[in-house]
Image 1 (cartoon, rainbow, N blue to C red):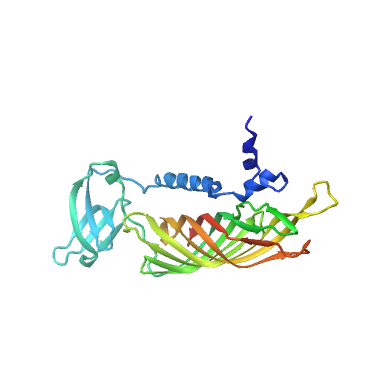
Image 2 (cartoon, one colour):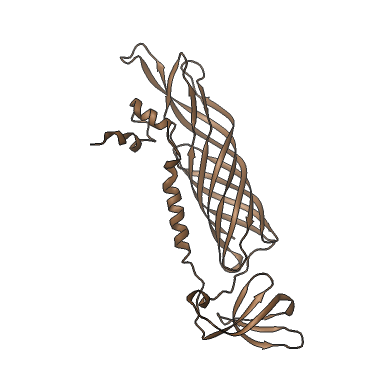
Length: 316
């Protein structure tokens, strides 16, 4: 029986106070976040099946727009004098396209494969409008505690990772479609450390070619984080059989954070969308303070946190 794996099973619980468990907590690594990345990868693969409505004409007319879109359907009227086109897409919608809006067109093109049979009419995106977002995020926060023993405090433990579930709110503005700048906030609703608050300035660069209804972007965030978490110490106590006892303290932490990641924005009608993204963070501590009465002065204790977030937003 392999009992050496038990410490990993109780990695984030303070009820088990065996010394080997505490040592394992100290070495808690980034591997605990693997399930989050696995979930994100699965969702990304699943969303590749998110397709546009399909049609299967024997031939189609294709218009190559100057903004990168490729329209498939039927050219109803072509004005030879000025080059204007009356076009009907695969949904049956009719609209006019001026010569200044397209590069060239091809008529009666035979669709040869499954991919090219899909209706490639690209939904409109926001160009220079404001956008508001609301959603949920699932986080990972690893304190990475640093402790030095002294005459009072002999050991430190219970510094394992925690995984808050947050409500997300955001607002910002697009600039020339590719650039987005705004503010967002995440408030924890389920967490072993509470409250967890993140307020961030946000920039996102949309780098896809505007040929599909899935926008690809790179978000970068810079902001402020505040939380209160607990940690435990062994202190000398001659009245106990072991010669020491456990004390638990709450630590209030405030920090600056820098995050970068990748996102997928799935377009809907009326320039609305829903987004799926993952970010990783590095935190720079501004202040850490112990709450309540201390047994024997302030411990030599600090943290160097890292974290990550998987988020789902609806953008309007």
